[in-house]
Amino acid sequence: MNIISLNAWEGKLHKDLLTFVDAKSTTTDIFCFQEMCRGVSGIKVMDDRSVATLYDDIQKLLPDHVGYFAPVQSGVFELAMFIHKDITVTEHDDFLVYLERDAFDPSDPNSYPRSVQYSRIQKDGKEILIANLHGLWKRDVNKMDIPERIKQSEIIRDFLNAIDTPKILIGDYNLLPDTDSMAILDTEMGMKNLIAEYGITNTRNPNYSAYYGAPHFADYCHVSKEIYVRDFKVLPDVVSDHQPLLIDFSLR
Image (cartoon, rainbow, N blue to C red; front, side):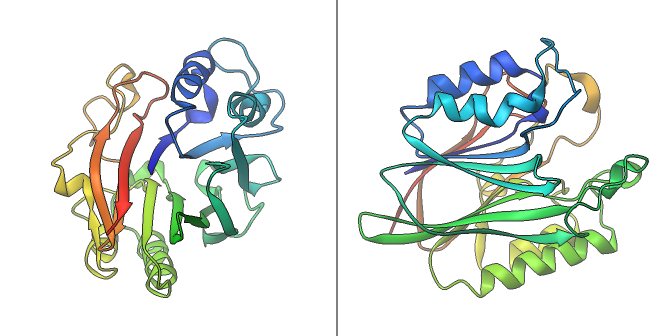
């Protein structure tokens, strides 16, 4: 199986993003998106298309996939998975790792709630749990340790350590690799950090300058020991201010 994970940047590169999804639609088993929008009005993207249509536009391009939306704010914003119909989904849910649902205060960009979306799936008689994360972001501390991030990692650790099936955690963690928050995920879950293992040093799109000169770590993937990784890479496609991650894997 394979997974593509991408912070969709609220669809700001709407046309390019849809072209990318369409091109990958027949070769990708699972898409995991962060910053996914559905039903948001009054927000325009670079091609003057409202991001309100983003989730539904992607679903139209994926008739062989079932979409699962996990909003943290008024049913309109955050995480989404699209899972191929050949894969059996036995459980789908999400849980909060920062603040409460619908806690966003427009005057405070740091007040967006954060959650982990997960699906327990079966393919060829084997079960695996896929978890999709968009971690807490705070402008004034970038991706460094703060108590809220430590707590976020502890919640994720406790959840995944209670899962006795093979598992993958993937997404935009909003963490630097040398933080205590990342160390919790690296050392206390018994899972491999593929960004570190494959020597990847940048998951941000170099074509956009918002993070020029800043640390280019954001997106990660952790896998449990039962996962055999055939390939893992950062894709070069210009579809967001992040670059897509691709993991191709099987169970040992």
